[in-house]
Image (cartoon, rainbow, N blue to C red):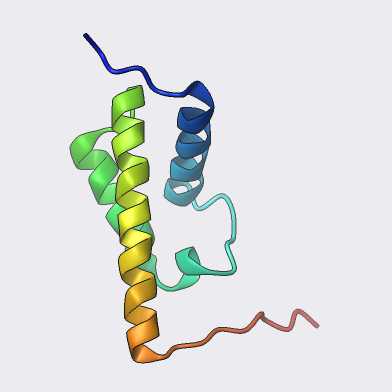
Length: 87
């Protein structure tokens, strides 16, 4: 029997995955650290897929783990960011 996934969670996760893969939204934080975040998500999507609720669920877990690892590395390096002056 297939596992049931919360529809709202899957929809939000799918939106996040698409935004990252399609570079649709500029984030002021972790997705702008480097292109490797987008490349990693794209590679995982290519390998594992994102067409079923289970695949989307797993991809969201992957993104969470990736972000935690990146943020941990930034803390180790003591890197800080500030907003760009758009003026």
